[in-house]
Length: 244
Image 1 (cartoon, rainbow, N blue to C red):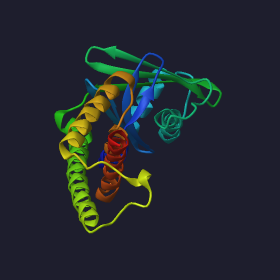
Image 2 (cartoon, rainbow, N blue to C red; image 1 turned 120 degrees about the horizontal axis):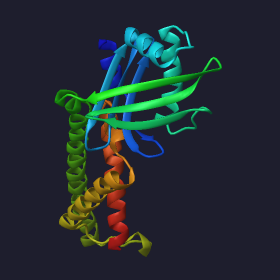
Image 3 (tube, helix red, strand yellow; image 1 turned 30 degrees about the vertical axis):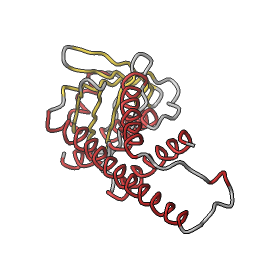
Image 4 (tube, rainbow, N blue to C red; image 1 turned 180 degrees about the horizontal axis):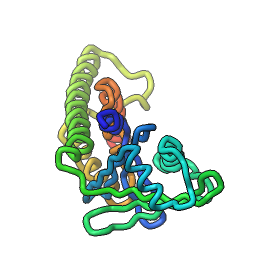
């Protein structure tokens, strides 16, 4: 089961778009079992099962179907992965999400070997440590990295303004007026950045847009830095366009 835990940790979060719900989810499925995390941004649910549970549940839900656990797990992977990758699902597949008490049940209906195949993912509330490991710590890491990038970029732009000022005092003149920019206002830039940051958070909650996919996996520090800088750079370019 340790392999499932480690594998799930490496998976990015993705939007699970269902007819009646939009949920964040991440899954890791092998021949030995699967691990699944689901969240509606209010709660987080989790299920992790081995081949014994898969066999027993398959028998309960599919009386006419006989298949080894590895084949069932492979089929579940083929059903779930397209949804998490936002690609077309196989035909004759339906997903329904239900709340039963504190649990969340994701019901799947499809076909396997020409026979109807039913499966229920039984997800229970995730432990605080699991939520911290998969959501809080990755997002906090991204947030702190992004804030550092903002400060670094602001410092660099202030230094560039001083450099330009030195050139101008030495008699340098722009050959093209369109290259001229207004002096960088650090406080205005940081305020605008915070406003846009809050807007992104609100959009995530209300419309399903997500940055969690960037932070949900244990990405290498260099990749996180690259993503963060690109976001900050776009903010700076937007600031410059409005300032001119």
